Amino acid sequence: MIQKIKIIKTLIIIFSLCFPFTANAQTVEEIIKGRKAMFSENYQNAKKISILLKSKKIEEAKPLMKKISDNYIKLLDYFPENTKEGFKTEALPTIWENKDEFNALMKKASDDMIKLAKAIETAEDLRAAQKELMWSNCTACHSRFRAPH
Image 1 (spheres, rainbow, N blue to C red):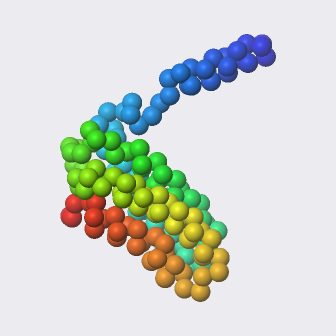
Image 2: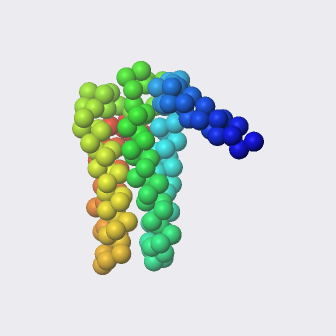
Image 3: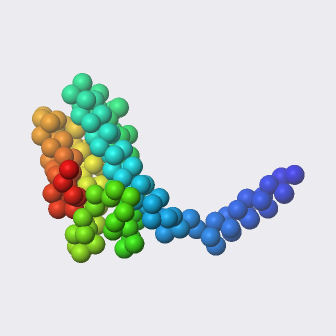
């Protein structure tokens, strides 16, 4: 029985290596809706972080910061060329015209969330730390890469 389990696990690993599942295997609709969902989740978590930090619940805020950071890295794969329009995307063409700049901003936002998780331990002004390391990235991206509402 144990030998059968080992064989099945080995086959699953081989299959997953031969046929990886990536954002490229998704439909345009799934990609656009997926990125919108991640940005929405990031925003909701950022609001929760603000509330938690205001209440001095630093340890409860840290996992949300990690989640936001992880989402920014995942989002790098959610802007292929074929997702420029449709499905109520608010992404501007400047994302694809300035892909390196956009990707750098996503990476910076991810890194800044990790920095924020460390900075809140010693920051005298939690609001200022949030503004510098969290909200400023939102503003920078929205002003350049997102259609106004």
